[in-house]
Image (spheres, rainbow, N blue to C red):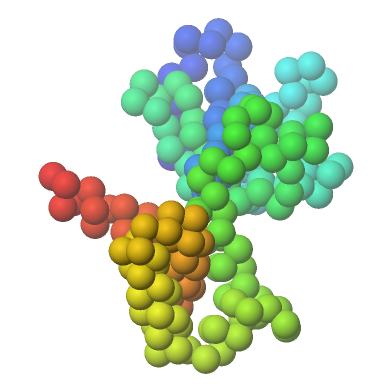
Length: 199
């Protein structure tokens, strides 16, 4: 993808609107603008860099707060006049200290957030973490927990205990996320498989 391939005649100022989305939760984080220099720097460094229209200068998101946006994927839209960047944020994206510049519900897509936490535990294996202990025990032990939690969820469903079912089903989802991570399987892969079946 090259900046020169974008159709910038609609903007009239040579700037490309850029939507940034959390690659894990899919939450829309912010909107910014890039000129060719900002686009090139973003592609080169892997850190989202914009052109500030007010200050007329480049600025890398996080250069003062350390809340950088690490590029995961970039997509042009159908008209090639807008860019979508899926990124991994280091912290709050908005200057207000909020997750995003848009005030959508914070619990939106939390299973993906949890999957990100599980992946981080797997990568860093922090001491004292229950998730770390599961990864150390391996897939067989994690699988046993998935089976155990599935059984408990079914018992509560059969008994009609809704609150307990929600509790046990949540345990099941968490342990399934750990098992998926241990196998290197993402939620996106499951979504693709389910979408294929739906067709």
